[in-house]
Image (cartoon, rainbow, N blue to C red; front, side, top):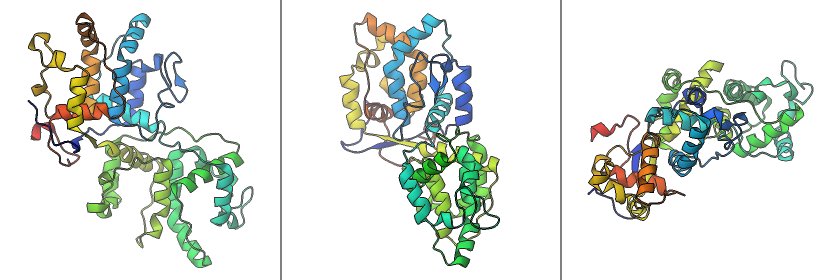
Length: 374
């Protein structure tokens, strides 16, 4: 039997970092876009995966959604003559981060509140709307970065220290922005420019961003209790960009300038690193295993299904996605022969089941963790 930790505890397992750029490519090369779309780009016969994602979207939710819709997806692929592509753990991680990134820059804002922020933070005293109030300063109506989320984050970082110095000379307080204030401000300013939602989120591969985080000196401060990977927050545009804007008010150091492609890399890494770890309750997972009748196959050697003992140390959400995609159709057929209904998962059931099958003790992993280390 796999050991389960005590009731109420949460077991932590480490996840592969995904890459949104690779995920977008997979979405098209694996023919997902034949049926699905992401923010309107792709097919129309299946749900838009970008619009169905919210800030609570997580890897175990992706695994649960794929499991719940697996039978209907496989049937649709057979009808359309779409070959079923291979899907491994890394590819599952890449697709997940792409789906999450599709809504990374979405947070409800209010134009009326945004106009108030523009006035109360005294932005209008220098920038103005249609024409600048001070020489050499661009009016808000001409800010091109509002249409490009990566450029917005880059400009907020590069401009923030210069702004603080100028405001010190003017004896104005530095205008710190909350995530909601920035969301409201963006809606207002995009309305001034006649824009709708922001541009498409297009981060670079995560590996380059990890190196930049060190070379730009960020890692020297963000360690220990300040380490970003230790924070459970799911960062969106307004969290990330507002944090970059507020940074000069927390430090006296002169921040390094960051180029557009460099910011693409940093954002790509920061998005992926939010999902290094997931937690589930193994005791609840044990009950899910029993209630969904998983043991009818996995506790029966005659079924040829993997025994629970073979799953210990590797059952993450991305592993479950890969296993479902590879073995799901055969599982479905065997369950039909055994007259067992295809189980559906809701809430945290998939995370809890993964924690139970993983069989780990309660402990926090580091990003370099591999099941082979156990």
